[in-house]
Image (cartoon, rainbow, N blue to C red; front, side, top):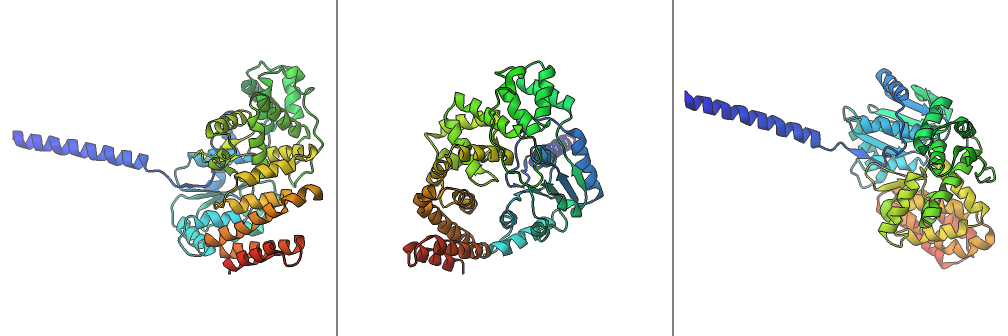
Length: 432
């Protein structure tokens, strides 16, 4: 009898231990998160009502579109939603449709990137609770051929054309009272009438308020607007109808950070001229003088709401409106060429080279002829290497398209028979 009791107790203990271990294993098993999902910002505000609307749209279908102007918080709303879900998350920086292929290809196995992307999409649709986020999408037609058949889809966009997917949730800035409370909390200063003036002048946009609040910690509300720099108005993209003082707010925040750490300026300018979806932290470390100094400067930019990291800490991102303000300053001060030179120095033939080189090519073409000429060889070399990186990764279709474009650029910019044109032809051959 006593032996039976002992055996029974041992079995019970073993069952409890087994159940505990299994629960720990289930809890510890990492979910798959692919892509640069932003981490929660220092000045985060829970937008419970909007999160509930996302959940409501998904309860009625597979699609939800967050539609609103730049700086209203669409990306962080989407990030807050997917950070809380348990299933697989694929986050795509959808400004460039090619990023969708790369994201899905990371899930599949095939020699060709497009075939791997199709395999990855099929695998994703075999899961029970997957969600794909297309952040900053601009082209519904380009997106349509890569929509999953089963997984949920969350889109952030400034373009109303995505209404065709259904499930649209309009996203706007804070209400004035909420904006004032946010400014008060962000600045650590008691809000008065001047705080309401600041909120109204900035259109109650969360991004601008976060940047302004960081400066107001060291400066009264009453003098903030008077001391803002007055940057020339920038050309607006579709859906960007924010107040002109938003760019001024970004420049004021950057000026305050640089006053404390001058190294932050070069990093901010790198983030502005490189790929819009973000820059690997390891690449930014190459800007020197050493990783510790770079991290200190990045911390200052992050605290000022000028930059942010993904949840894995591997990618540093800058909001599109912030990028545009920094680029506007570079153009106005005729320093864009020097910013491109710094970018040339840190780039390497990594998988993200084509994205960075494409961004630098756009900026290069905006340079005056006298500044562009001495940099032509470097940018064309980056473009050729981009074709080779795509081909080596199996993205032959993209490599061929880019290779033809790069070869045409060599023929247009260089004298007939130039050796670099022959090199561009050889790069194209690798994509065949």
